[in-house]
Length: 190
Image (tube, rainbow, N blue to C red):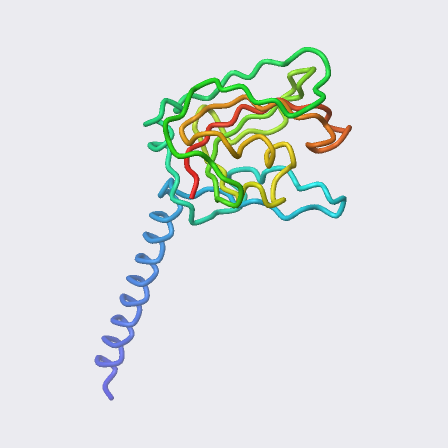
């Protein structure tokens, strides 16, 4: 085989390899920037209390929630969550924005945006909002994947609702985090 033919084959191989790499990089960025992925729920911890929601950027899921879905129902703005007064003795739900969708049932997979603070101090504990941009969170409700306060307070609410959920420490993450106040935007339930 001539040197010219070998060089031509080598150049063709390098060009094919570069094309494959370019396609893979393009697919990677297209998938990463797709915006319709949400985190999945974490498994219960060893203390038998369910773990807190996974930060939105930590674990992708194939849930079909988008920021457009929350915008369509008036939930496109990050909520301003204010602390409460007194001790929280039971899970309480207050509808802040009425939803018009289906009623959430235990066992469904929900997609939500949320913000949680310490009920008494107002200290931010966690949020699916970053710099005013929502990163929806997806989990199964009513089956022990989430804290008992969510499993009790979210079923029965309507998709498209923004609710304030006050949860006593015993039904949340324990005394170290204290009583909590969540504002939850219910984007979808399937």
